[in-house]
Image (cartoon, rainbow, N blue to C red):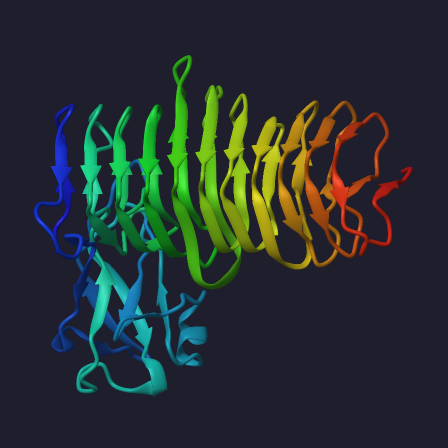
Length: 377
């Protein structure tokens, strides 16, 4: 239960020997004696907790009771009426904080014998300010700050690591960093879409990239608001964001990219999803991606933004409803080659003029009511 900070360039933090991955736990157990009854409330208890925050990030308290995350509600009154919930007021750059809980089954945390664990550390392994560090074979969980349980600095490598129970993000990468053979499992935020892997650089230098190789983003249960892989900046673009052989499951938007000159999705699988490729003005090239177990109404993605070229080559996709492209913009070019598409809806559809489709050498399995749909607005 400590945070490991890599502050010098080119450091290595690695697992040694065999066995389970060493764990950097961002949570602490809240002693039973630290809880007190909240005045004026029937079922709410509170504790004052010291936390580690960072001015670069946002803060997101979390609480687990016997290993089960308690969802956050928006008021003390709602917490009082909702067993198994927590509430917190403003926590921005603040320590200590007051955390409120309505325990499961309306029990008493001072005497129920349950284990209450609260997020208190900004990250498990933090190398934001260091360049070229490598982190291998570790696991971390329950980050308090939004920069993930693993925060990887510029040109860093995160290899064979496991990030669990993220608050807003599980894994954070700066420019020219790579995550390889990593797993991000379960991520939560009650006010905004949580993102399991996030690539971020405020102002990238020329040629900056983000690379994900054979990484997995998965939730234990389907989470419609969750994003698997995301990338953005405060200004300027990454040269490219690449996803090679990645696996996404139970995530509403598996790949969603902003502020990149081009996005690559090469191989990999997507299951239990809503929008495969979400993008705003970023050209996307997807090669050999396998897509199945779509949720009702699922599509290839939201492709708003002028002249964002989308290329699908050698993809295999099964949609149970539409499977179409949504929110198109005049001037875009969509290319679909060597794909096999199955679904009950319309895999190729546009509602605007000025969009160019190149459709070559595909197999459309004949369960669809319309393969091509062109509508005028």
